[in-house]
Image (cartoon, rainbow, N blue to C red; front, side, top):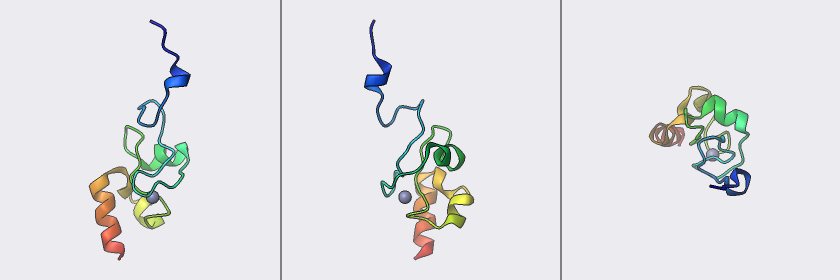
Length: 74
Ligand SMILES: [Zn+2]
């Protein structure tokens, strides 16, 4: 078996943290994802599409929770 891990690394690879908000596509830092995302390093909201307060409450770590938080903002 010869797989070049670096060449085949893609979005969705659980070993690497998201660098994109899964809701709005804005750039987020891997650190942001590790802190505010879920345990698979996925993040469903960011400071672009949610308030900082909602993100800090942990509402960015689940798609439904993030969607509910965004609805309440409007
Ligand atoms: Zn976002």
